[in-house]
Length: 362
Image 1: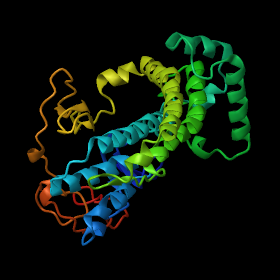
Image 2: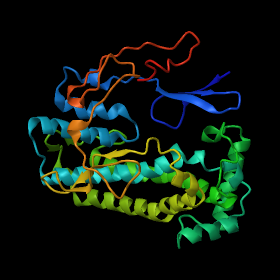
Image 3: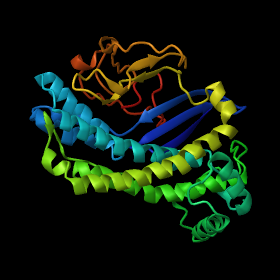
């Protein structure tokens, strides 16, 4: 006899997600389905519009990683028209992209999935002085590190919990044995979780200085940027650099040490590949360093079965999309250039469950 466990919606993601898990009498998972339940239809919205509008529309895919979609759509138009942007435009795009990277990674690490492995309740019982010693084992001068500060964090979170307005700290599995970090490690990363809320604003300001605004910048156009003269004004670049150094300090004295701290206690899961999916990864590359478009800071490639020692060459002609289990009319895999977007929503079964053997997700 099996039963279904439904978690809907999944939070701390961009969009709406539903998870259904089928378990047997021994609580062993027999099957599971992940369903994206919100259809955006961006491709359909773009039909019939001026391609120069694409960037401003497509970046609405997400409210966090906006710039990635923005630049990709602009580059797609430039590729179609045979246009190469001038060097200053390439540099400006890289600087905006850098701002995106600098605040997006800490946001992902702390705010989007940190509470899955940081036990907040455990942190409230940590010894602040021991937390200082632990933090200094991973960084000689840790970010915002003192027994006084850590004690203040504990008091702040305790007051927050007692208010009954738990916000992101509600409905978690506090005390579950799957949490591996000792109390002091939980306190260190919880402290930086709160710090990162303010620091992420600095990264957003960096993007706004060169992109016009955040989260959805507007300074890119097909063929370049809106105004190089304004963008590279000395005062504006000084504002960008000032914030860059703030972000750099947080990354080097909080984010990277915390990644290493967490990895120390969760290394067994990492070595086993838990959470790694099928363990095949694809990278398109990023940060164009010359006008040819071939020299990239982050190279293109494919990693199969987690074998980082033998990356494979990326051949975009071999990429296809298929919608066997998605709510579209597609019947066979298609290359993105030939892809179609024809929605075919078939809903749930008579019991209100996903049709796991059919179409069940966008």
